[in-house]
Amino acid sequence: MKGNYKVITLCGSTRFKDEFMGAQLWLTLAGNKVISVGLYGHSGDNEVLENMDEGR
Image (cartoon, rainbow, N blue to C red; front, side):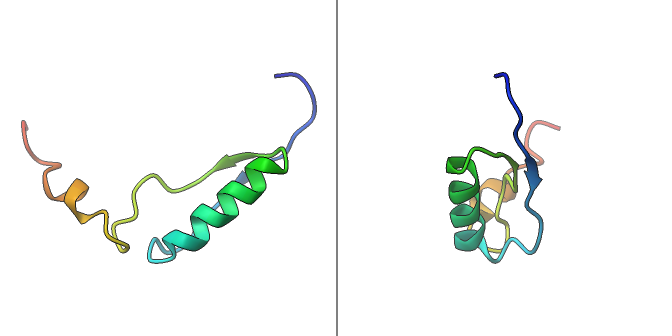
């Protein structure tokens, strides 16, 4: 992709999942590149975190 665009990093507590998702959507649709949280351990992604040790 050519052109000028901002790269914006979202950070904060993962208990605010809905706010992260809303900000990420709005900023992306505005033409920015957004770096954000991948897992929301404080907002219900515990099932992903529970099995992270398996296979080690």
